[in-house]
Length: 222
Length: 242
Image (cartoon, each protein chain N blue to C red):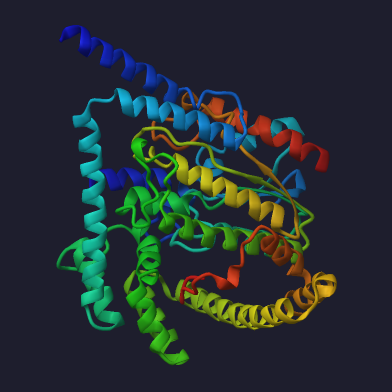
């Protein structure tokens, strides 16, 4: 028994040492690093006592459950302001007051990324939406200048998305209707028409398979 | 609660959003010996100021500095964000043509360590290679913020950008270990922002250079040896531009 424990201990230490030294390794390519670390992790997993693995998985499951419960509370509340109340009370207790300024930006971001909150915002008229966002930011502790600054950012983002979605529709038509030989030139002209000097950024993104206006629009965030 | 106060202090939270963040930062330098270069970014640069100090020695004089502890890339409550630092630098005379910066790290770090890791950006040892989709989506938005900011810089007369990426945090007071995969994905995206931008931008990747012993006890910020190593990475990229 003692020998077995010693062997497990030694193997664990060796695997953990391998993981630790990943940071110490000379610069390697990303693929090589992934392979090395995966190998070390597999060795570490194999060497760890099952109880330790299970405890870590339990902790992770608890975190997932907490996230899901919060998500459900926001879903159950009715309307934009009630959802904000639900989030603040669930996170910070009955006063719903955020204790630390550090949390305010991340809380705003988390709230805005919630699908039910986005549905509320999408259902609002533009003026109503701007007022709701200003109200939320004020409640989270953003001062007047910051609220105005973020509102200006919202307006810039709205214009950017409107342009981007129009471009995406026009692009689809070009891809659909223009022959292969002429397509690249047509797309380049289209990008310049819609994005001006930033056309090259969009081209590079598309080349790598990233289509920024096909991603979810998060009102108040992106 | 105790831990979040540590976090607030180390990340540079401000009571009004602009107090402690600035207090925990190296002094702002508006008019420097060499005004061509301006530094913007977060506490990796700002907390100790040692990276800039090292580079000042090599340069034989100071560069402009707007870096602020706790700054997120575009949003957050810590004033000024990296985007706002750039706007301030452009507004203040004199003009610069070279930006040395970082940004995006706090956007990922703060929710992961100070809240409840809402985007599931932490990956435990048994989850290697399985960074959550929600974290990737979140980081993709940071990528768009970064590339838009870099494109904005080009429109505002910046010719060159040196963008410092992030290294792996270690276990420490901030509880920021378990973020290695998020750092990998984040650096990959920030490097793409650099490459995809219309601004001439060089991405400096510190992951292979900064070891655990180069990081202070909070697990995030560079020690003197870490700052010197980062300066060693930046200088060969920056000096030909001067």
